[in-house]
Structures are given as structure tokens and as C-alpha cells.
Length: 101
Image (tube, rainbow, N blue to C red; front, side, top):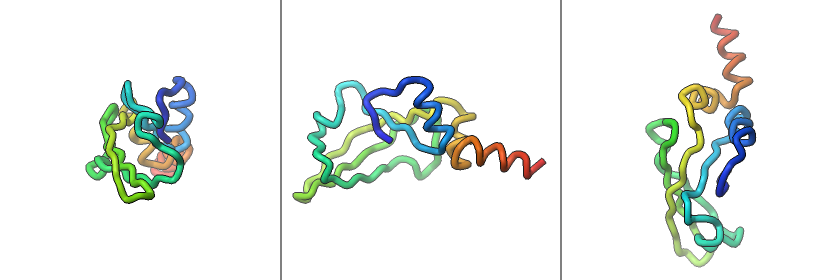
């Protein structure tokens, strides 16, 4: 999910559900990227794993064949949240921990 900002609890809930919260940097948003809903997207920079506060790259593919890129801030903010996300959310993380015990 990409947003201009996140309320603290909403961001935390997304991570807890296994959803990757991404944030536009200051000065970038759907309007500056001229997004109209017809685009497709690629994310790069996640191949080596997720680290708190890392930057990934959004590539926008437009219907006319043009592309645009923009950096996005990964709003997974702690190493614990990295583990929750890697496991598909906090419920899956806890269940795996219980099964391993």
C-alpha cells in the first residue's frame, strides 16, 4: 500500500496483517506522478530482503508505453516488524513461534 503518510496505528496494523506500507517522500504524490489509475507498477529493491526504513523504487508503466520512477520509503520501522512481515503478519509469526516451541 502506498500513501503520502500513515497514522501510527494504521501503519502498525498494516504490518501486523502482512501488508507492506510504502510512503511517498515529501514532495511526491499521486498528482506529481500524474497517476490516473490506468498504470501498472513494479517495485524494485526488495530482492536482498527488507530492512527498517529502507528505500525501494516504484516504476510506473503508463498505457502509452512511457514510464516514470520514484523512490518510496518502506515504513516497516523495526526489526520485529520485519519478522512479522516476513511471516505474513503477526498472527502467522506467533503461530510459527508456537509450533517451533
